[in-house]
Image 1 (cartoon, one colour):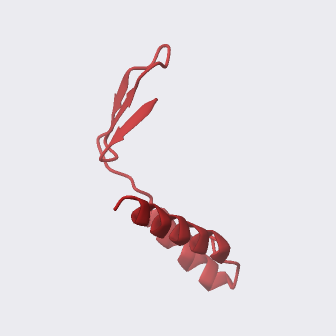
Image 2 (image 1 turned 135 degrees about the vertical axis):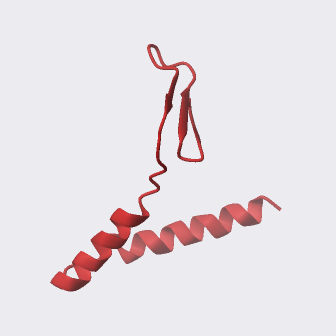
Image 3 (image 1 turned 90 degrees about the vertical axis):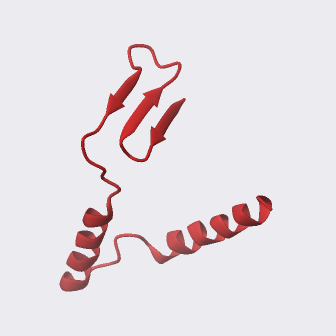
Length: 69
């Protein structure tokens, strides 16, 4: 099992040879995501994340939120 704490500390349980990794910076991928979107719009290319995947993530998130109540 891997546990990621605030995108800065990665701890491994049951992984031979790996126990933890500390990161100096948080990288949640927002800059890369925004850059990919701007590049796609500028080039007239397809969206970096297909619309169907966005809808699926939203559906599952709403479903899980309903189960948590």
